[in-house]
Length: 385
Image (cartoon, rainbow, N blue to C red):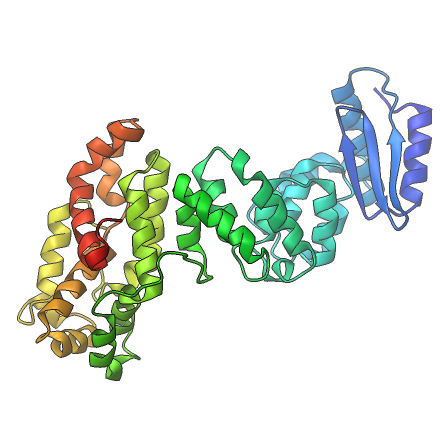
């Protein structure tokens, strides 16, 4: 099958106008080009099956862009969603009318605001918006708020935990949405708690809980004021601060009623990412038993144990400094315990069941009861949350 003479002529005229990007509407059999003067359209008149005809159109575009009519299959095999596409080829890829090429551009590390604008014109879809908002240059461009608005409006239509979490995290970046929308998003997270993981993963300080630090925060801050450069002391004070308490409340809330296994895994990964730097000793593997976590926690607070002797010097200084304050040591113990929690704890349970909802939470109870105990201790008077 070949392109009709009429279509071939019109496509050549379109390309002669030097479009910045090409988009193909396969349902309406139309080709659009984004030019300096706006959109230009070619209505196709296929001679044969539409799918085969569109393939011929893309081969024509590939030949025009790369000088090789048969180059399209070669190039598509080299595209990747790992961000490794060469920066100098990005806009050329947007001339092929191929969705996978647009996705490759959206993922590319060298993406510029100008090319991102063209890619968004080609395929304004949520996955592409998320990819582009991972890049600071795009976040800070005029396109950033447009992409964030799209994700905000389409969030209710997402059905899987990961895109929900990532959409929330990305649109909370500085300058993308106003306070009113942040408040709406927070209220929505109280109904759909998977959104809370997006708040937890956000680098912005956007937790909207009661804004209160732990009841002993002021005393702890005064006691440890000489250790502000000690990363373990800093993490303990963070956990007791308004920000840290907000993070812990959010995690506790999600743990209390996760919808499915994916939500549990994403929550545990988020916690480990945020808390693992609290562990003062090298750990060869994540623990898969509660008893292992409890044992190591006890040893790291025992100044006479081998594990304490091999711990980071900053940890030893903190433990010795706080040793006379039993309340603070107890909170440090709970924080250290929580910092060792990972997906490994629930891998065996999930390998034996596909349960969701209430049944899943029942099967997780032997693990979550221990986690809840530590959370409730760290939250003090807030344990009713």
